[in-house]
Length: 93
Image 1 (cartoon, helix red, strand yellow):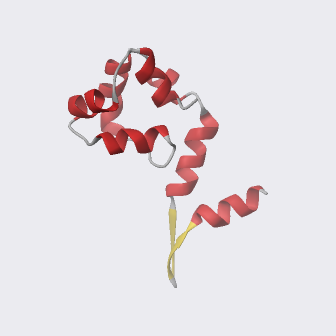
Image 2: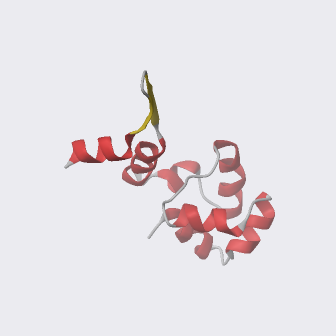
């Protein structure tokens, strides 16, 4: 189970309650929980306060975080911007 969802549910919080507290949309929470996106760094202290955990506990799934970073990175080249998602995942296989 995704750590964002685990800690939210552990504290009996709905996506709407978390979203309202962070002044973002419930859809953003859903995307974190599905591993599609990652919260902005400046939100992490507020998230861990709501979830009553540490940043380390929330992010200790290094593989999940690493996969997100790989999916979100782009590289610039002379021919334009190349999405590394395919390149990096192909290298891992």
